[in-house]
Image 1 (cartoon, one colour):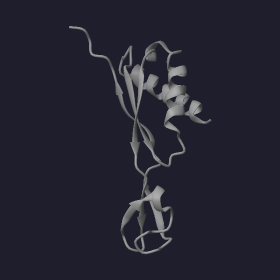
Image 2 (cartoon, rainbow, N blue to C red; image 1 turned 90 degrees about the vertical axis):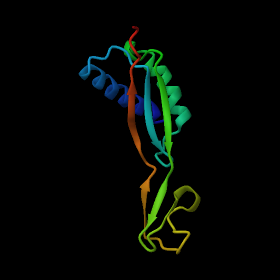
Image 3 (tube, rainbow, N blue to C red; image 1 turned 90 degrees about the horizontal axis):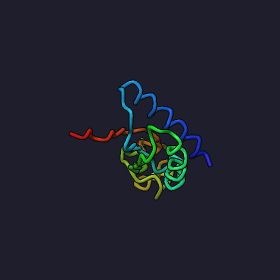
Image 4 (cartoon, rainbow, N blue to C red; image 1 turned 60 degrees about the horizontal axis):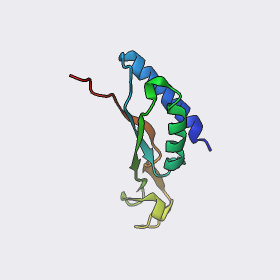
Length: 118
C-alpha cells in the first residue's frame, strides 16, 4: 500500500503551503486523482484520516478526491477515447500509436482554510 507514503507527501506539502501563508488550520484538502494513477481512493482517505489527525494544523481536515477520467489520444486517427474501456489500441482505427492524455494525475488542487468568525 503506497497510499500512506503519498499521504505523508501531501501532508508535507500542505504544511509548507500553510506556513508560507501564515495559516494555522486547514479545513479541507482537495486532490485530483487520475483513474489510472494506481491510487486507490478509499485507501488514500483511510491513510489520510490516520495521519492527518496526528498534525494539529490538519486535525479533522477532510480529504476530498476529485477523480480524473483516463483519456488516451490516438496519433493514427487523431481521436481521443476512454483508456480503461479500450486500453492502448484505438477503438476507432485499431492503431497502437496512442498515448495517455490524462488520468494519471496525483495533485493537490486546493487547500481550504476555515472562515474566520466575525
